[in-house]
Length: 497
Ligand SMILES: Cc1cc2nc3c(=O)[nH]c(=O)nc-3n(C[C@H](O)[C@H](O)[C@H](O)COP(=O)(O)OP(=O)(O)OC[C@H]3O[C@@H](n4cnc5c(N)ncnc54)[C@H](O)[C@@H]3O)c2cc1C
Image (tube, rainbow, N blue to C red):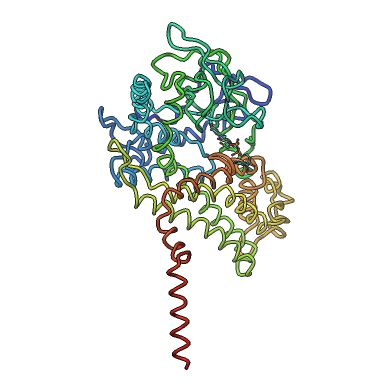
């Protein structure tokens, strides 16, 4: 079943998975009021690839059947640019509000398979072969993946990764006749209710963990023993006019419990092998995935800039210097993001095994900046919008025959009728002020690590290439510099005499 349609995707969600939302075990993902809107939005994402096949589809390199370009293992800069167009289509659909549409994991697994040699180390050859086979299945069956790579937080005083054996964290219990039995917990599976399978792979290295924690695998969502506890829903089950974003784009986040779960042998990519676990993510993962995440970020920033500008025009404040400055600030973030992606793609290169990837540095800089830029963007939208974000009559009020003429008279904008004005400010409030807006701000602050953690990563990455910085600096720290200065002073003195 290559490149699925939305209807095929929705049919795939009908299984016996154990998903809990708001204290209730969900019986039907597609029909549940907290999940239905996003399920149908994601179905539209699957349909997109058939609406824009030139951008979104490519022939499977072995079967020739159409698969999504996010499954591509890029072999040139042109491949990366083709993938860019497909990723952009998906990002535009939710204006970047759904961070974990299936293309995110598709790109991740294409990167893993492209550098399977990095997985075939320290005795993990069988795991690497399983991974390559699985990636083909992922692409050909157009599977939607959720993932959980972060350890549950109990006592940060002991660090963020297990030391020795920690029974709270996901671990291998024993071998079984078909594979292995695992137990424990992990955070935080975004998209869980809308996934076909769950992926586990290394997050940060665990230098002192027991081997039993060093695991990577993919298993179906309805595997017995898997339990997903979702956060409270931020979906709002009204009409699209009232909640244009939260009626559709709550992608959900779930805490995952592995209550004695069997992982079949052919689905194991790392089986209690700490050395392999601690090395596989070192080079290929993140510059590869960062292309997807930063394209999404760029789309979201451009949307925010357009929306904030339109808000200012609607109340005729766009000409005021404070407003212009704030709009210019969002434009600056959007432009830096666009330019960094462009730079990263232009400087793309082969990273081994014939696979191409973007240059990591500009994307690492963005990764460190965006967790602070996005909250500031939300602040600007709220500053420009002020009380107007809250003077937005509901559909029922607009449809009331007695009230409507009064709303039309008193709630107009500058050259904009009351309904358009309300539509715009509702959109802005849903983007920043509703439960969805708040969850999305939390997402941007943390989904790839906090700003602080990402700054540390950037410093480590750039420290490896200090050649020019050292040269510029050392000029001023050498004795020759002092002598040069003395002779310059001498020349000045003799010229004056
Ligand atoms: C909405 C949302 C969706 C997510 N979706 C997924 C998902 O689908 N799959 C998944 O596996 N994970 C997911 N995550 C989890 C995400 O991977 C983690 O939040 C991320 O790795 C950051 O880790 P952390 O939350 O422990 O925060 P940290 O990065 O540890 O930051 C927590 C606090 O510690 C501070 N801090 C960080 N580093 C240091 C330091 N070195 N010294 C001092 N202080 C420091 C930070 O400033 C911050 O205040 C999601 C998270 C969120 C919020």
